[in-house]
Image 1 (tube, one colour):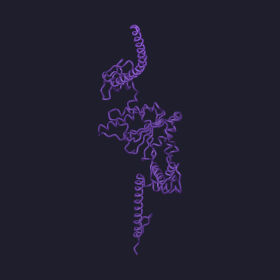
Image 2: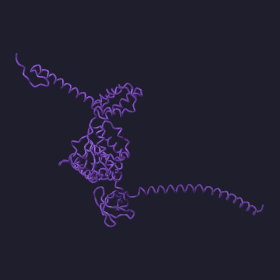
Image 3: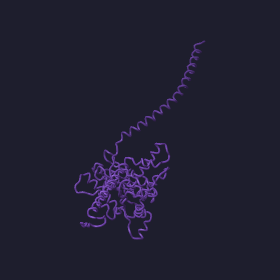
Image 4: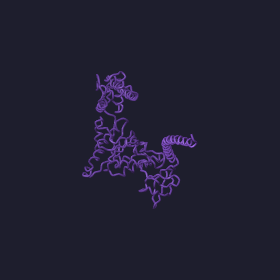
Length: 421
């Protein structure tokens, strides 16, 4: 074989091996391209995530005034600044809340007023599921609430024709557990109203002016979601009688209370916003809140009588199955208990049946349920007071009997000296 033939054979073999390498290399590049694309996406996402951490945080502020294309803002610490307004931030006006860049305080975004305190949290239920049938023994209170709250919301034209203005709100007072909150929820459901519930202590804020702003935001929310009912539980927390001497915290509570009075005076009586206050201490409520034109309708929710106890007992036990129950005797033992305590007795009686793997409740279960710690202490006080009363009656009878034997005095007659024989 000549040298040229050897050279041709080597060249052909090299091309064949090169072609094989080339084709296999092309296939391997495709996998690397997929991996490279995946790595690039990962790097891009990581860089994007890092950019978030590099951004300057924004600070919330309140716009006090507008001057041409600039604004005067107030920071949460009370300082005020004259700053620029971003072109992307439009339709801002004094009183709005906004977000500002932290270095030069340029306003970059407008936020809603309610974002500061998140007043939406006070809307407990849009449509309460408590009806008038769920309330027992409070017929008189139901009638008064329907006249003051329900009727003006359903038939406002009736008051216009008569020429009178209904009360703006009511004040429910009485011992705990008598059904004050249930009355407010029932009237909210009957009027298909938004129920805004809060506790008086929630209106007390740390910094000066924040409590008053929270009250204002709540009433603005009530107007937006009208018809609505604003229910303030434990009203004595902010509406106690004002005194001249007090700490800075007490003065801040008084400022919040004055803002509440201003909001009650501010809206029209025929607006679809009603206020219901609730307290256990009517004796310490400020008289300014209970004057005509504010919460001038005072409704007492007292402890239930014998007939009311029977109604409440039937409501709380309507889904229970009884066996050999003397309802009259059980109701008689519940004298002096509130509606919440009657419910506690019924629940505890059900537990006694469950412990014995029974589905029917017996009279003995109710008797045992009176040993519930809360109910038992109150029953002890009632029984103790009854024993004292019986003792005093017995001693009074003994004294009158002695007087009758000595002086000839009867229980109804006056003193008549007995003639000596």
